[in-house]
Amino acid sequence: MRAAVAAALLAALLAGCIVVPQTREVYDAGCRVTTKEITLQTAVVGQLAGCRGDGCLAVLTAVGVITAASAVVSGSIAIVGNVAYWIERQGRCQR
Image (cartoon, rainbow, N blue to C red; front, side, top):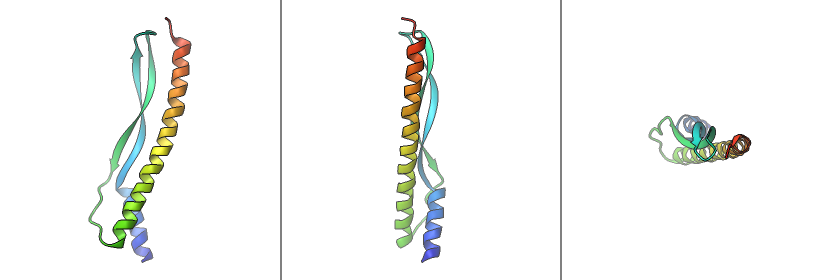
């Protein structure tokens, strides 16, 4: 049973969705300045290969936990980064 759980967790690390922050440049026409903005993107890591029985439950649970954890961490990065970029934009704004 432990081997099946270990295999399921390994498969979960190799297969699933994660959320990653992406930085892009945007132009603010009102301030006439180019600034940065962080958005969240989903990425598929691997493919979920055929699972059976109790192993499926473990894999799906692990994938859900990994996806939720990556969303929380990436969301926190995006919030802090966007606040910093907003403060920078306010300092450089030439209205």
